[in-house]
Image (cartoon, rainbow, N blue to C red; front, top):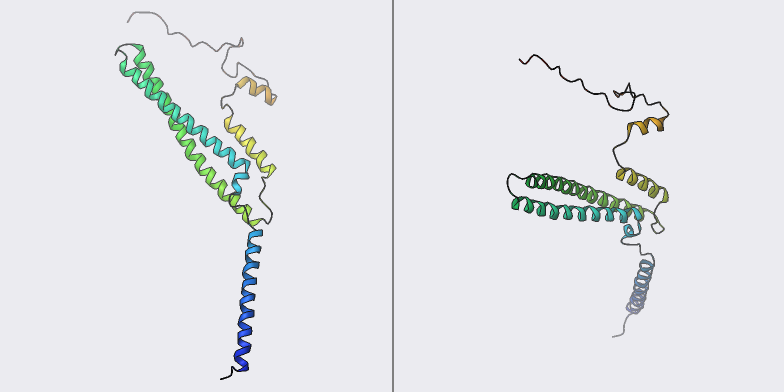
Length: 193
């Protein structure tokens, strides 16, 4: 039995299909390998790195306050009952615990901000064709916000008046003209009721 002409062409065709498939697979592998995007673009982001550092600092302070509160509580437990040492230690322990709670809140805040930044950076990196790079305007804005977050919240009334260009009038602010606050009137002495 002689192979038919159709069968012979089909063998050639399948050989070419096999070569074509190998070529396409190798071309796809080459193409995919050349166009590899950075899997973690957030590591190049300065804002993301700073947020991680801020979270680490909050965590360090929180642990430090926990140990200080425990030490002060131990000191208070060892102190005598009617001495000022015990009351002072209790007040200090309460302040340390308040600071610890504040740092725990800060850690939660930074976890949320870090996750949001991670999503934002990865979204930007996936949309852009070129590799991700930090935006300098965005970094400047973040730095100014950071400076405001860390700024002292208390301010001097007199200095604020000078900054705005107004004159500070102590009489209108409830102070005596000499710069001393007004003294409250003393209750009248008398009669011995």
